[in-house]
Length: 279
Image 1: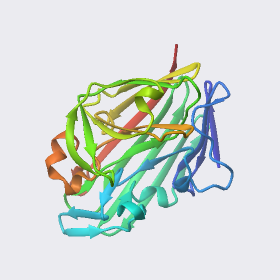
Image 2 (image 1 turned 135 degrees about the vertical axis):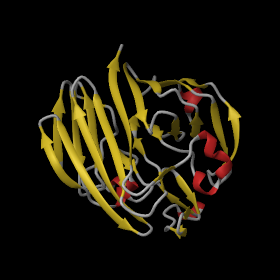
Image 3 (image 1 turned 90 degrees about the horizontal axis):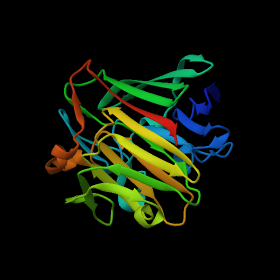
Image 4 (image 1 turned 60 degrees about the horizontal axis):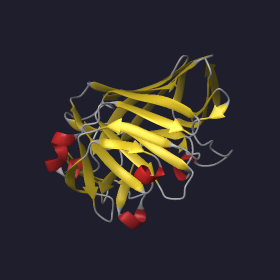
């Protein structure tokens, strides 16, 4: 594990386990649910991981691309969907580390994808994570990315953000429609039970974790779409800045509300997120 610290922030990073964050704290209090020692970050509601080269679900693991249609394994078997991409399942190389900073790099060759990803984590006055992906493969390959944190959810947790739309979903959690939405503001009564995608997000969010409050800001590819996951009775809430609507590769009618980025060979796209303690 790589441990870094800056300001009142502390983080533990697992390069060999998909580059996952095992823990993140501020002022000695957990912000993310700590990943138990030895636990699989891809099978735990804890820590955080990056999603790449798609986020959320692909119906039947199907991905149309310039050379045809790829079929990825469905890791959400009951729903028959491929969830959260490839990068979290592979190790990352450590490019550099410092007391308050870590840079990881990952090279993926999984046809039809061929890409290089670079993740930079910095701690100081704020927590900051940036993810850049460069397409080294075919022209026009579709790319999506995002960050999936499992925030602690003590009594008094509240969330507030603005958006313009909300994706309606079917029993398999795949998009079927778009409804108007101003976003969310409230506690358990507002968010419990959600696994919902919001479009037209303004890129900012306030999350009150009991007596503590944080401002989230998404930038670049992560500034317009947000997924909120807060299962009933669970001690987690996820506010996920992402680049596109779930399964948009197979549902082009939803592309105006958040499409994947179709990158030429050699092109790159960056998404970033920051967390700042507020009063």
